[in-house]
Image (tube, rainbow over all chains, first blue to last red; front, side):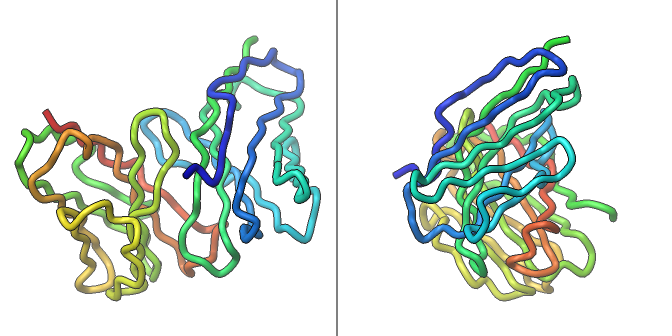
Length: 112
Length: 115
């Protein structure tokens, strides 16, 4: 039972354009969502998060949008840079809980 | 150290062998987590410690998996009688508080291959 799904295993975007990574969830109890970025041979690193009381959170080039009715969130990166090439994981939790539930990840490649 | 340190980085085990994976969390972090990441999948929660207390082990896949953190610092994940399906990257993470997601720091993981 995959509670958090990232349906696109990979995404290729030209440098300078917008990258949009998508994530769907099924558990309506989730109220906090995070995006992690992972380079090869390294652990995931926290990127940006959003609480269910908001529908948008922005941090520099990164913006996360949450659509609770559709149980969908997306990460926008603009402009995309070569250093953004990595695997991106969407994760969800219930605030105060200890465990994160991750999606399968999307490999983003930024082409020069 | 500055980050979460895991050892060994790579482990090859013959099926049926016991293995022990070590995690050194960030100094002072009371919360410690273990996750299992199979190839092409996202990390899956295994277990959680607050100091030396194992408060949640609901993600451990079988009784062959055992984790401990006896002094509230270093943690060891032990897998007995390894099977091929145990092949994965095992990630350790620590934080100053269980819901301090901003400060949730992962190690680089131990890649276990069971042959």
